[in-house]
Length: 293
Image (cartoon, rainbow, N blue to C red; front, side, top):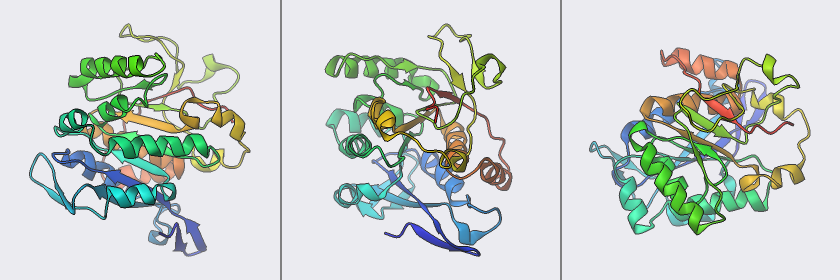
């Protein structure tokens, strides 16, 4: 697959996104991120500078949502495994079908685990794993949220904590900080600054009684981070090889997290423009454990 698109000023990189679907997925948990990413451009108002290319993977040629929407898959899971190295972002929508995925130990669990392993074996590439709504339960069951902070749909906080504790017992006993937030980002790329108390995006305490964390709302642009050299050894020493992990709450939280992804990997201006086009007010989440590059 091509990762290059033509703009008015020549070829530019297109960020490859793989969206994995299961039967009875949440339709809006697919359509929201898809709408955001498809409207993002590296250069504002230049369709030739398309920022993301999305591919949908499922077990069958067509997969039906809980609301009856049937979506044609671009590839099956076997092909997705074969081409996994080509993707920069893996998105996991939730929905009522998540329970069946967990009970049957079905895909996309293995695909998600293999994507995380890719980052650990090749930390030189910046990869992102993002879940929408109860999709984070799949990440938790797969053992990928240990030692990280995460959120999910508000109706599933308790279930999320139970699944994370079970995964910790099966793994290395590291716990997950389940946070009641719009979206939560781990392993972001930005500089917190030397004086945290002067940074308006740093939270010093949690009002809900959960474990406090150094967290920051919003994001610096992807192009700011790539100007600096990042130590591969440092990234490799982090959880999941420095894989950026984003979990979000319900449907609109998925929109917010997707706008964060645009801001982080393209530019903040591009994210703002997408929000304007969609007539949507972008609500920020928090960023935990940023990588000081």
